[in-house]
Amino acid sequence: MNKFKKINRLFGLVSALALVGMLSAGAASAKDKVTFAYLADPAMEGVLYGIKSGKIKSDKIEIEASALQIPALISSTPAKKYDVIMNAVMAIPFAKRQGLNLVVLSSALRSAKGRLGAGIWVKKDSPYKTLADLKGKKIGSYSLRATGTTWIRIALWKKYKVNVSYKGGDFSWVQIPAPALLSALETGRVDAATLIHSQAYKALKTGNYRVLAWTNKDIRELFGLDSLSAVNVTYPDKLKARPEAFKEFNRMLRESVLYALANADHVGAAIAKSTAKIEPAYFKAWINDYSFFPGAINEEDKKAMTLVWTMAKDMGILKKVPDVNKVIWEHAITD
Image (cartoon, rainbow, N blue to C red; front, side, top):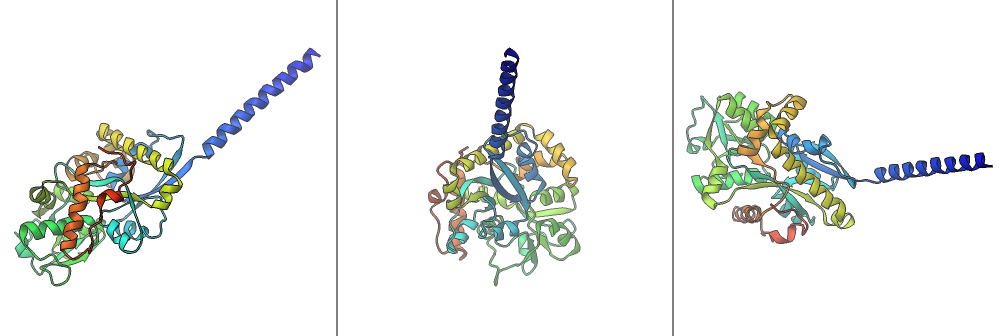
């Protein structure tokens, strides 16, 4: 009899352990998935390194991240294909004009302290010495609708007093994917180019190119704030359906940023090894001198958003300036 009792107890214990295992597996498989589309650049791999390497974890969600070029990020917005999209600040009023509301979760591309992330570049041996020399010439840009390009045009208009209109202006603007801009400049397809991120870093490192205008520095001088080109956005219906998932997304993204800042050398070496497209020093240079990805938002970011929209209205790009406080999520992380 005792033998049967022992067998029953053992069977009960095994069954209980099996049940615990099943419940644990069920909990693990019940994680919410949050899809995130971001700018295709080695620096962004550094920003997301903490998440992708498993350093930053969650028992609530998993983040599925996809790298896209700027035009693809813009065009993906109306389709709502992704839960969160790293998108242009200008995308917010553009989308509103089409009846689509966007909600800002955090800032994504803020000018870094070195303010080397935006400018007008020419070849070192180019005959063009000033912006006036470029009148009637071709300027290549990664996206004519991008907020970064709008900031550049604002700086050229306000500081250098040139006509930056796409129609009848002083320059002929040509849209070329960011990875191809250096090649276009080198081959003479364009006379000047607006280089950003890894393209600007490479151009500066080679010594084969010159800058006619550091426009992020000009923006700071003109308006007393740093430009904000991109934000991470979602949609009201998605946010309403899963608010806790988006809170967790914000937490993980912010912690991944903080991890990258605290371990910039290690992260730079890791992304250089994985992409083989950039040297290890790039990531640290990017966060210090080119662009900064906050994963949070502050009052200056709000002012920068309002400023670029106001200037865009003055340029005839927008008819109405959005209320910045109405487009930012109430649970956004602040820095």
